[in-house]
Length: 204
View 1 (cartoon, rainbow, N blue to C red):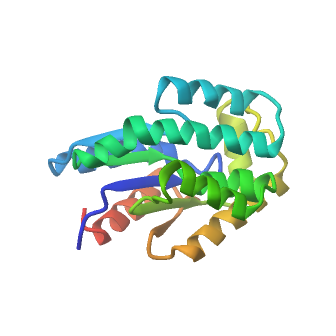
View 2 (cartoon, one colour):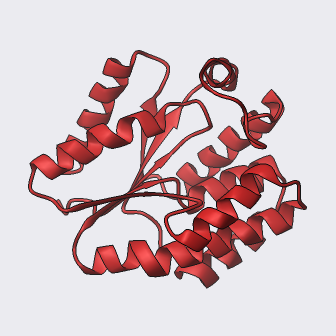
């Protein structure tokens, strides 16, 4: 089995995926892998600037999608693609699945428009492995409220996150071999054990 080189972490806000990025990075580095840890939107100076606009400025849904994919294009060209070409492992906190979930499912941008943007910006490239942290939206909202002040996305109503979850499920159904579903409801330790098992199944 070929080990996945490009791994994305996905899930609704509050699912805890970011908590497990550092542990995954440490696990892979222990095998001798060179690891690049990054995030979307973000990862470059321009993409981080666009991230701030997307998170905090009101805008049309399609405008939001265009900004997210513009940030992705810069991130892909400057960070992800070069790292993959150097045979490094890329751990990315969100990638294109998030756009289909948030801008597609959440905001209602047409799936076909997002597919076109995905082809234009990254040539349709998807991660080798996507770790999807699943959690009931109500529990995710409780965790977010206890942890931090909400940004423009985190402040959305529960129905928004139910649509986001459904869109993630649609992406999983389109590429079932790429996804590993991680139940994010249990303790951090239990989630970490699931994550370790998923990586082991994929050769890590």
